[in-house]
Length: 293
Image (cartoon, rainbow, N blue to C red; front, side, top):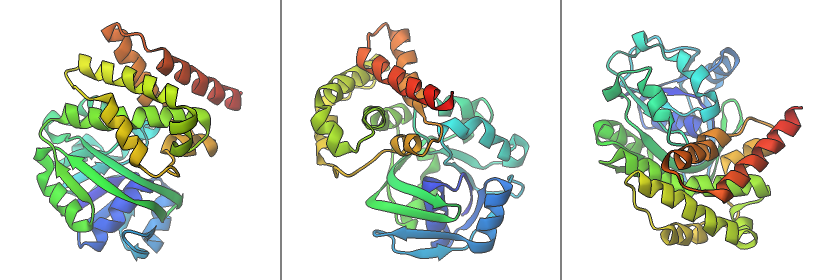
């Protein structure tokens, strides 16, 4: 298939390289300097699961040639600016498949592109961009879920090496990732610590936060047991960190609005009190404001 990957960072760079290695046509869309660097040297991947390799891909600042699918892999903080790289007139019949953190990005994309061409997906991975064109995949985790309208794309991602599951209910799919990711991201960022630390030293906050998030999910018709999410968190490696935590440490914008902000907006709409979420969002926002002052 022909793919465009919008945002060749830790997630997009790995997806682009693995798809190219599997024989698909891949073009990454990024800024001028990043595009030039990747076009000249390809994407280098360092991964215990997929091996160390370099894949050649095309690169450009904007989509101009027809593709079958555009994989949107930028951070939520970059989405509004990034989608200008994919003009609606250039999209044609291509699917737009976002792999972002959060719940609200699908609505944003469907205001720009045809509703039936935006097919949500989720990804669970620990991968980081070391520099433009160098991606480090730091755990065996590489799970993707995707809507049935994009099952052909799912087949190509499976052939590239990802663990792929096709889901029929996009709301449940998005919430199932969100109820795991949002508490973990908020607490690791607030504590400046890995998962092992928060599930021991901040366990009271963790269980309270899981209760708040799953309560909000239930108001949207998605029933998730917080105890099952806690068991899953207890089983993952304690050394795991979140991308929001790493962004904060590096002084980059954090996805606090896409995660904490989305929770607060939904809680207000449902009339649910979420004191732990509110406290964490205020503390992380305050920290970011003091750094920028």
